Length: 143
Image 1 (tube, rainbow, N blue to C red):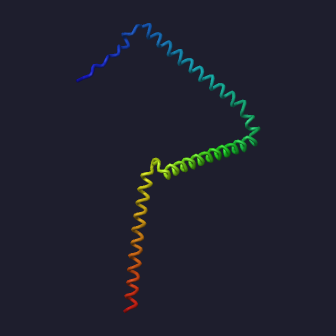
Image 2: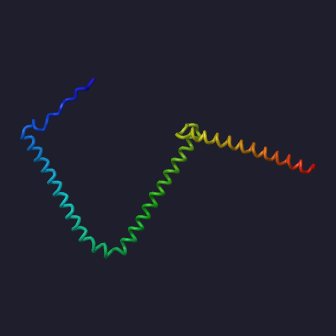
Image 3: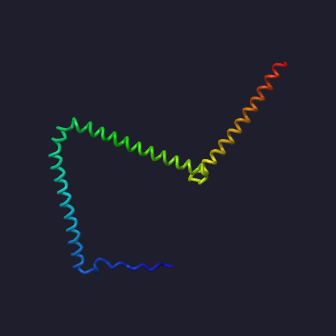
């Protein structure tokens, strides 16, 4: 009933040299990444110190340029998205009209049938109401 799972050897059974090698590897990797992180931070601060005066000098040109580029990019992305949506819808309609049964066609058919039955029901009610109105109008005229 109970499954036999192999037991992992306890940490104390490993030779001391393996533990020392693991610790040395971890310290070396961690130290290297820490040094790399510090160098990246220092480089970023130096680049920001050098670039800030240039950004202040050129900001009357850069800010409107960035704004225009952002608007253009958003416009192109929106245009592409709308175009893709239109092509997708036209492709779906083409498959639906040619009888290839695209995804969602059953729901469309069900909704169409439901709308048609409601339209027939409303037409019948309107005819009944019209008949009742005509009948009551004739009764008022004869009295």
